[in-house]
Amino acid sequence: MNDLTALEIADAVRTGRLAATVITEAALARVAAHDPKLNAFTDLMRERALEEAARIDRIVAAGGDPGPLAGVPFAVKNLFDIQGLSTRAGSRINLDRPPAAVDATSIRRLNDAGAVLLGALNMGEYAYDFTGENCHYGASRNPHDPSRMSGGSSGGSATAVASGMVPFALGSDTNGSVRVPSSLCGLFGLKPTFGRLSRAGVFPFCASLDHVGVLARSVADLAAIYDVMQGPDPADPACAGRPPEPPAPMLGRGADGLRIAVAGGYFEALADGQALDAVARAAAALGARRRVEIPQAAIARSAAYLITAAEAAALHRDRLRTRPMDFDPDVRDRFFAGSLTPAAWYVQAQRFRRWYHRQVMALFDDIDVIIAPATPCAAPAIGQRTFVVGGETLLVRANLGVFTQPISFIGLPVVAAPVRQQEALPIGVQIIAAPWREEDALRVAGTLERAGVCVAPVAMKP
Amino acid sequence: MTQDDTLETEIRQAAAALGLDIPPECLPAVAVHVRILRQHGATVMAFPIDDDTEPAPIFSP
Image (tube, rainbow over all chains, first blue to last red; front, side, top):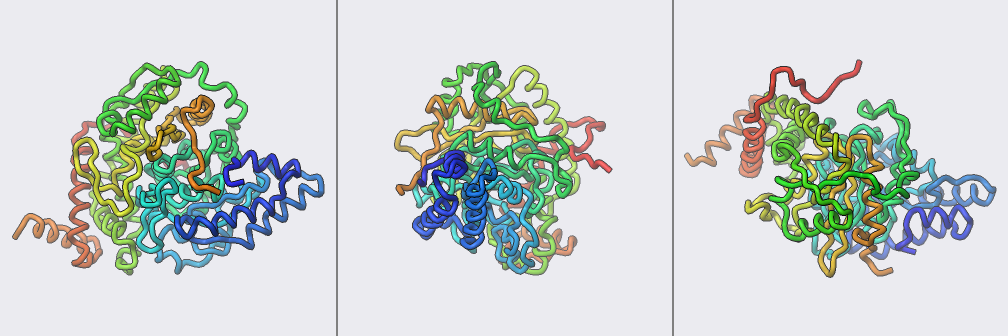
């Protein structure tokens, strides 16, 4: 049962072949079996999960509609408000905040669709992380090799899905925090267009760049889960007023008619052989021979870095003043440095963002989808501080997102897709579409999945 | 005084001017990150942008 997709579970529950309570008990048993070794969960909510599952079973028994995700277990990065829990955001400090009065909008919408919340997942403190390491709660481990990083900051989300504890999890992505762990743990991950999914009830990191996203093991799951979370939400000022645009009807069309190019320049120069090979195999399967250079991607990355540093440091200023030694040191020292960012750098970075957005939008005049590496390499070892990228020795924590940052910087929708490996650690590619064209990225990912080029197998044996 | 000492002094003074007291044991690591931010700052500031290019965020009243 551990490798059923979300939609397979929902189908079994909706047709009465499996009870939601049986599915939930099985998921809780997998958490009990694997989590002591992998460290994905920080808060397991057994009672709530069984109550939600029992509600679904009652609806099915009464002949009602339990929703498109009926009985599907899921969990969320502990950045999301869960009623009755203090939202950790990966920190110890936030445990002193009062428990959340209501669930985050995205959890509420998933519950309304029949999904069953199992609990909250480990993450890098305050989401300032690409490793999945956390000095308070320990590292979330990579199920494909527990001595390796899960990636971050949605590390526990990737660990929980790749190990088969749950078929999907929610994460957040400011600079790559869904796409990096998806790549390192071999999962499909969706970071939709900026403003597409409500961030209400999600602890902020950098308001200009924060997104909600999904990690799963199939493209159809990604599309279905994303779909039920769509729609305006006045509680998030950045959430667009657009009506939901269901992607599922388009998935069957495959990639036919889409103009696909491979990102060159910056994206070739910094990737290792395995990352380049993943891009080449995806491009070959799609027949994509065109190459495109995203203009000034390196400056975009630097500008995203500055905006993040400045906004996050400002957000945490009072905590830095009053209890600096209660932070994860790897995060605190970056916040202190970010506090010193001159306003002129910040404003220039935001003005560059406007310029860069115009240039990249021009590329989409005659391209629909761009393929790029998701991470410069596969998962580093837990505890590894530095790695070599493009011939330069850099900090792992700050630089696993060199390829994801220039894309989220202007809010483009991206599917991270894991390219099949022979006895190597997983690695993914980014499938990047124009704003509000999530369906194009999902269609390409689905095509690669059907061709067997991209796969997201469960890493753990049942 | 080494270059590191000079940078750490500069950081401590700049932080103090902003009302932040950085614990001395944090200064070496903060300095590492300030150097990284300065590289990114130099990269972004070197790019010429027209005066009429507005910052990206828009406020809708």
